[in-house]
Amino acid sequence: MTDATTLGVLRLLAAQPRGSQREIASSLGVSLGKINYCLRALIARGLVKAENFRRSSNRLAYVYLLTPDGIAAKAELTRRFLARRMAEYEALRREIEGLERESGMVLSPERSSSGAVLAPEDTGLHERLDLPPDRIVTA
Image (cartoon, rainbow, N blue to C red):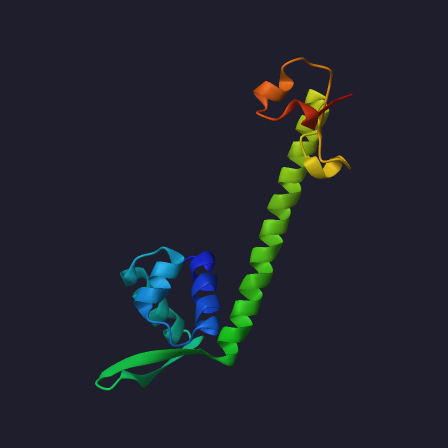
């Protein structure tokens, strides 16, 4: 079970403790069997507690509650996920800046106060970038 799946399950259970395994699987885009396996593992690790409740007049279902250890695990997984995503973002930002310097173009609209794409003088650039001509500012 990956950290991403574990975090996804813990986040969904925190938001919707009465969600069915089928609903959880659908929300995360994984199989019902995988969610069943994950929930059993989380229960065995003491991160989730399952309690019966009546969903309709004759049908039992479960409510999945995060334990204090589950809440702590969710916080730690969220912290690690965020740190990993921030590192990926910074690496991508540096790569884009390097490519911009290399090409002499600034392709990030937020870098231009007008929202235009800054480019060296080049006729037909707007066609290649699929932008209207007024969005191209020559350097």
